[in-house]
Image (cartoon, rainbow, N blue to C red; front, side, top):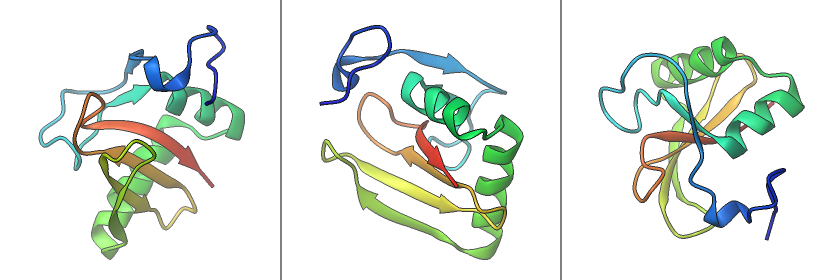
Length: 103
């Protein structure tokens, strides 16, 4: 199990960082980031604008897939044309939130 900088196991952390306007539908317009996603963005040098662009371009190009996450919750994976991949949880306590990103 991964530990957050706060010493709390990642699976037990409910920290959320507000980012942007209020969400319309949970998975298609995620506006919140989990603390894990925010940390990964910082580590990987990914800006909020890049996350938004990745989600937008993935929707336009149809490069959005669904998978089950580590804890069995469904997730949408947005592969942006800018090389950024964004994972948004669609059910559970993090529904509608970006849970991780990479490029």
